[in-house]
Each structure stands twice: as C-alpha cells, then as structure tokens.
Length: 137
Image (cartoon, rainbow, N blue to C red; front, side, top):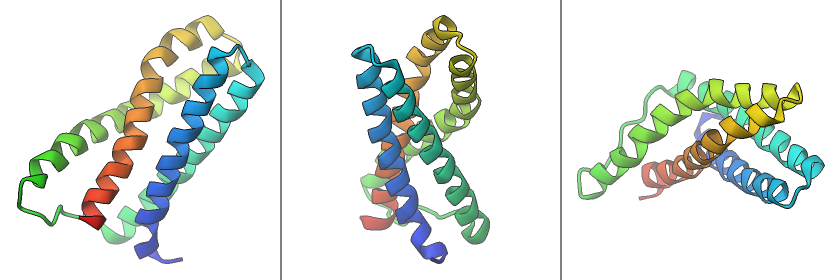
C-alpha cells in the first residue's frame, strides 16, 4: 500500500466508525451495556486507525487543495471547517468519555457522551463527504 491508497482507506475507516457508533448507540438504547461497550471499543479502535493513517498520509503528501472553483467550493468548505474544528475538539473529549466509562463513572460518561456522540458521528460522516468531494467530483 502506498500513500495514494490512504484517502480511500481513511474514508472507509470513517464510514466503519460511523456504523460502529450507530450500532453502539442502538445497543445502549436497548439497555445492552456489554454489546454497547463492544461496538464502542470497535468505533474507538477504528477511529484510532483512521487518525494514524490520516497523519501518515498528510505527513507524506501534505495539504491537498480543493481542485474545483465552482458552486461546490463553498459547500466543500462549509463541510470542511466544522469537520476540522469538531475533529480537533473530539479527540480529548472522546478520551474523557472512554475514561469515564472505563472507571465505571456512567453518570458522568452519559452526560458527556450525549454531546460527544453526535459530534463524533458528524466528524465521521463529514469525513466521508470531504473524501468524495475532494477525490471523486
């Protein structure tokens, strides 16, 4: 595998993370804590793999400018800017949420997860949208 394959891998990892997050959410709504934990550990692991791959790609390639100068350009940046901000904010927040669950502090885990989960989903889904716009439009 070379650097040119990494954007596709990153999009796939983002999509998989979104799926795992949705499954984890579904299980906690059903009261299935053990299943919830398994899905969420999968989402965390997939997101970590994504971050490693993303950093390797951008270390090798650098920044990739948006190539189109048409009506899609403002749409792209309207998705990209909140994606970047929330992705940066999510890293420490996800770690805090996981730490609270790991320690059994489920009340505080739940209180923060209510905010972090939707943001994490947005980052995953918008990451796929950014990939599609950047490499397939």
